Length: 252
Ligand code: BTN
Image (spheres, rainbow, N blue to C red):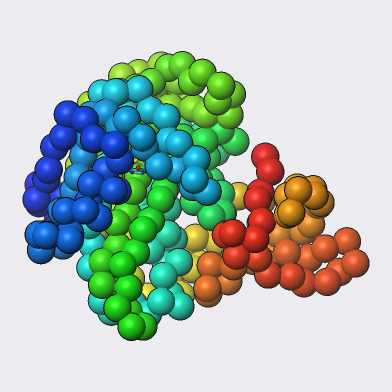
């Protein structure tokens, strides 16, 4: 396999509540080697962002968690883990959807879109000690062979996009290659390269989009996603405002 450590140690589960929760619990008792992957055929309570449930038909999609130990990263830079994960999935999608008819975008904070529909989501849960991250569980849900998403009209999958079936093993191995590439980039502190590539592929940059905050919707110009992972918007009065993940919801 073409990685040094990502995916070299794999734990396959037929079923668990959530691969992220499984990894966090396991880490309480076992010193998992960096790069360990927890993969489940079925999650009975897959976790999404903002307390949502992540729905994925068993054995048709990738639902996995990567255990990494980015002790080199300070808490203030933790959003870089989200950035590199999105970039790894971006590269993977670019390879698998080898055709210009696909518009692949990273939607802040952690959705992966193809042709404006969500194909993957990221949920990162960190363990901290003082000012550093001692472990990070990078949860990835990628819709692969599922062809029907009940109640989720804005979801898509690789199969829906291409009318082809994909080998989950092959897709997973390619994901690990790209994740390792970007993780090593982060370890080498190539922040400029990460930021530039991220911004190049981010959804909605320099356009007016709709948002929701405290139950109210509003429109604003997307200016940036800054060093700390804050979304920078310019409102209708030309005021620049920054929002963290909890403070705002980006509407489609
Ligand atoms: C989102 O809401 O977009 C994030 C979805 C993250 C889902 C993945 S599936 C594998 C891992 N385990 C979980 O419980 N959630 C993440």
